[in-house]
Image 1 (cartoon, one colour):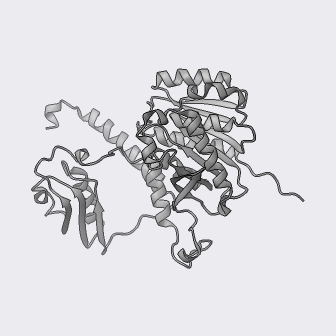
Image 2 (cartoon, one colour):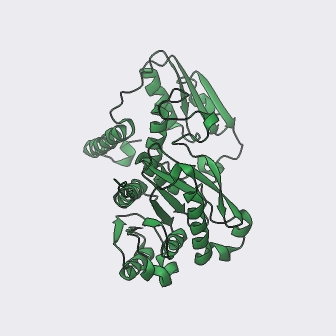
Image 3 (cartoon, rainbow, N blue to C red):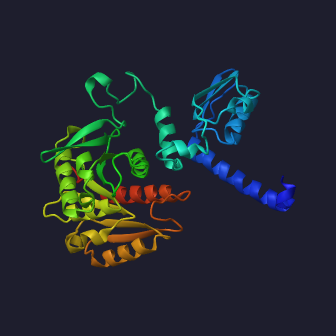
Length: 364
């Protein structure tokens, strides 16, 4: 098959060298200075998002076997019928939830099938490596309430409306960031949750919440009603200020798409407690009348391939009287789905908030 592609030995060697460098980079990114977990004599459970060709799952099984695994279990949610025949020689047990007759691809069975980012993987590995249980230092037991570093479900009170949210408060938090999602999204946005995980690692608390109720979302006009969304964000900020676990912490806003307009609008309100704003692929033009009143330092992050939004952000920056910066992520489009793009967003946002969310010195 390789011969049929007319790939030369030199070209193959170049590809292999590039991929090995990427593999080594990811090992360092995921593992850090932690040693690899020994597999010799252990039962290893390998989980994949589904089986199509099965090549990656098979490779994982082979690697686990070569490292001395005593038993290998391969578990997947979805696979084509007859998939078991491909793995009997590499796995000891096969688990699959469904094998539909009409199978065209794994993504066919997912509502959301975007690539898991490096930041999400790193955050999961860090949480897994942390001590758990009642003896874990600095962590209350479940009986005492919220455990620092988790994403507990909360009901955010915005006026008379209760909105679903996730509040994550890492130990010794130095600030708190409220997320305003874009149109058609919610507190479950994988992109915002990826950025939130990076902020949590930097000891910044995060609140991801729904700006609208399910009934309100049925009216598309609400999704683009910037004053309404900004009002909800301001209400959520007042609610958050009453929470004991984040009380007194400096506050920032992270807005995406239309949510960025709400973040800028709310931060421009007189007496706003917001110390910094970050916009990801934002539509600041939807808050154009309020831009001259924004005083919080603002970072505008736009993909280099998102031409229209980049133009709108350049126009908006010219109207901001506050400290501002336009950061362009090369090659990224509106959703930052390109490899490494979302990680760059997370790094830029973390640096901006770390710089501007600083608590005033205590009175002597």
